[in-house]
Length: 121
Image (cartoon, rainbow, N blue to C red; front, side, top):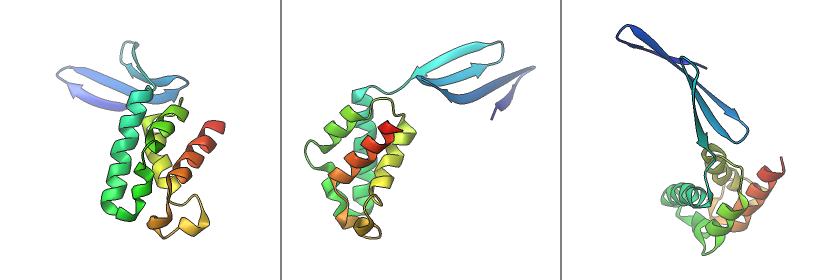
């Protein structure tokens, strides 16, 4: 969906879309800025921030931050964008039926399973 803003006498248009390796931002006059997919360090930062927010709301989910889990999650999530990484953390909370409705049952293994599943699609 394009976004438009009046800038004096000019109209600037940005179109956002996901195409293969990254996000392309199209501006009027066909200037294209490519934002690459996050590298491993960026993926780790995204996962750390997202998991910290979940743990703050649901302290029983602390196993998501067990040593090594987020590093492994960042390593196996090649090709996933920031939105998909944040969504994976939420999906981990419902990955196994016994964890649904009880955040204290969510494990780091659930997060890794969600990410492995996401990569296979």
